[in-house]
Length: 123
Image 1 (cartoon, rainbow, N blue to C red):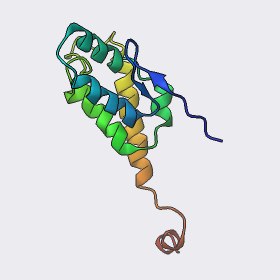
Image 2 (cartoon, rainbow, N blue to C red; image 1 turned 30 degrees about the horizontal axis):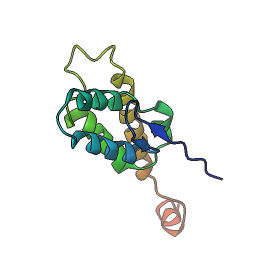
Image 3 (cartoon, one colour; image 1 turned 45 degrees about the vertical axis):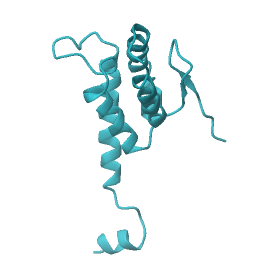
Image 4 (cartoon, helix red, strand yellow; image 1 turned 180 degrees about the vertical axis):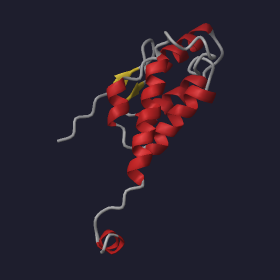
């Protein structure tokens, strides 16, 4: 039995359950009309991704997309400049995404056990 947990961006009606949907909600927020509420919603969206969601993620492309959002995305989600990142809530999220990306990229290099694996490891 798979339990799907849904998360909500504070102050909005946007719900998401994985990293790819979180990125989709970021696109939706970015397409809204320019306003103070839009900027506030983008900022809260960038800080509300739970770390346990990142650690459960298995889609490398979704993790790469979230990293792109934190590096080059809308101003509200984008990480601050160097020297201003230490106490920001987005810093542990970004570090968790980078760590998860490394784990997923490393696991793609493994050869699954099967005929090819046995041929590659035959003595």
